[in-house]
Image (tube, rainbow, N blue to C red):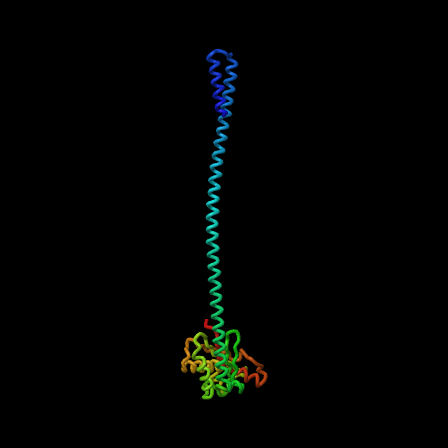
Length: 258
């Protein structure tokens, strides 16, 4: 519109100049006015072009933001799906672990019950105690039922008792079997000290002999270990005869494999 006005003015100016109807000053004035309007027109054009560029840039940015939002939404959806899958996998693993532990506890309880039934006579006589705690099963036998005083070789009566243990443990393949030798705190003296200088050696020899018998009767030696504790893990007071008798013992312990 503005451009049309300027062109009209310029046409008038030229017409007047041609017909000689205006003075020179009037022509110059009109010419200057036309140039001014032309300049404003150019400014308006530049402003309009700038607005067009700004519009295009805004549309471009909005399109990019929209695309990014769509991508973020897709990524978020994928992330949520992955997290749900991970949670489901963890829940399944936890459930499987719980079932496995329950089965293990039930199996250990069954072994405990079998040992109790098999060794009821020895338990009633106070020669054997059996305990189960936090997945660890322990068969505790006083040394007198297995060994003669000062000896490490298992006597015949002791072999009969150990065979009862073997009969139950043959079906236990998922546990480590640890044979522990324990003594009281009375020092070894006399000729016996030449063979067993300390209670370490005596408890070690007894644990090894029991382990060897279990192996000979078919238990997997890879699941067996012999440990000597000597006098250093007492379960009773060594100041009394009864206490010392309780401390002199062999323990067969079932624990989880490492």
